[in-house]
Image 1 (cartoon, rainbow, N blue to C red):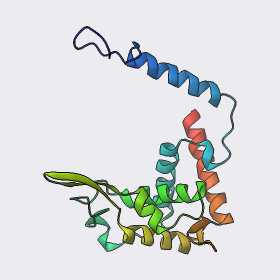
Image 2 (tube, rainbow, N blue to C red):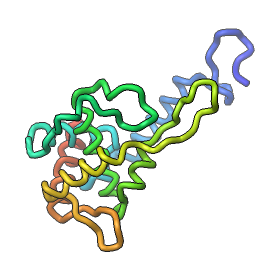
Image 3 (cartoon, helix red, strand yellow):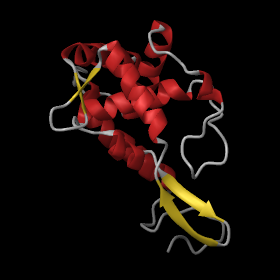
Length: 178
């Protein structure tokens, strides 16, 4: 696969990687043209999560616990996250996932935020993320009125929560265009 000239980056298709990236960007831009951002689903995940994390931080309703700077995000991790705002980012990620797929509970989130556990000479094994962090975030979101418990299990977005998330999404979408 790739180029016959050593050190020359060419994809298996015989195209330069930058060319492929430009083609993907053009394709994406073609479909984004003339679209109006209305909901969370219209904004790229990365941009929405960053915008909602900033929104949570500015609002000040989300309480950061004392253990936030020393806790690991799962048993497979060796150190706590290096980003001081990691809890806001995780919260906005969870809220987005609940918005897109309601009825998601702590167990499913543990699986989503789990990772490979490196065990030295033994093979890597998947291990789930921390349930305490996820439970704490969901309880905080419930206190804020963004999320409620679903009858069939898991959590779902409230009407107020949907309104707040959509306004942040529209703001993130307009920043994206500028």
